[in-house]
Length: 413
Image (cartoon, rainbow, N blue to C red; front, top):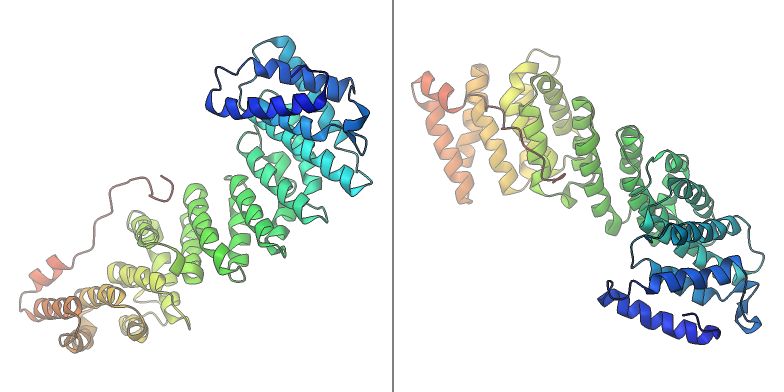
C-alpha cells in the first residue's frame, strides 16, 4: 500500500479488502498502512497528476482505503487514531463546499459518504457525528435523486450510533416530505430514517405522519409502513387512549398487511387496563358503524363489546340493541373466522343484556344451519347454553375474561 505507484496501491487495496472480509485478524496491520496512505492523499495532497480526477486526488483509491478501514476496529495507537480523525474531519470540511462540476461532485461525495460511514463504524468522536448529521441534512434536500437517497440511507445508519437524536430531528420535516418523493427507493429510505430517529418525544408526530401517508402509499411500501407504525406505537405509547386510537386507525387503513398478533395485542392491552375499557367500547362501536370496517377492526370491536359493552349501554345511541344492530350490519361481509368471533359476542350479549336475549337467540338460530362446521357448532352450543333454564350456568360460562398476564409484545420482541 505504500508503493509510489497509485495503480499498484489500488490493486493491493482491493486484494487487502477481500482478505479482510475473510481474515480480519490476520489483516489488521493493513489498517495502519491504509491510514498513512490516506494521509498522503488527503492531508499532504501527494498524488500523481495522472490520478487527479477533477481536482480530487485519486478518488477511487480514497474510497477503497476508507472502505477497507471499516473492516477493522478503531486503531489502538493514539497517534494513528488522532491522524485518522484529522483525515475524516478534513474530508467532511471539504464536503461543505458545493462542487461545480458533476464529475467532481460524484467523486467528492463518494469519498464523503465513505468517510461518514467509517466515522459511524469507529464511533470514537460524537462531535464528528454531529457535524456529519448537519452535512447530511443538506444532502437530503439535493435535487439529485442519488444524493438524496445516499443522504437518507447514511443518516438512518447514523441514527443508530449518535448519542443524541436532536441533530437529526431538525430535519424531520424534510424527511417527512421525502415520503412523497417520486422515487420509491427514496421513499423507502425516508421511512427507514423516520423509524430509526423516532423516540418517546417525537413518536406522536412521526406516527401521525406515517398514518397520513399510508392511504396514498403504494402497496409495496404500505406493508412495511404498517408494521413500523405498529412497532413504534407499541414502544413509545405513553397514553393508552392514543395507543387505541392509532392501532384502530392502523387496522382500518392497512389491516390486510398485519398479522393476527396485532389485534390480539390490542385486546390484551384493553383487558389489562380498566380505565381504558369505556373509551375502547366507544371507539369499537364507532368502527362498526363506519361505512367500511376492516376485518381486524371488526374482530377487536366484536371482542371489546362482548366483554365491556355494558359500560356504554346507557350512552346515547349505544343501547344494547344498537350494539347488536351495528354488529349484525357487518357480519355478512366478513370472513368466517371473524364471524365466529361475532357469534361469541352475540352469545355474551345474552348474558350481559337480558332485554335483547330474544334478538340474540334469533341471530344464533340462523347460524345453526350454517354450512361451515365451526360456525354451526358455535351457534348450536351457544344457543343451547342461552336457552338452558339455569341463569347461573349462563353467567358462569360467559363471565368477563380476566386480564392477560403481563408480557412483552411480540411486535417489540
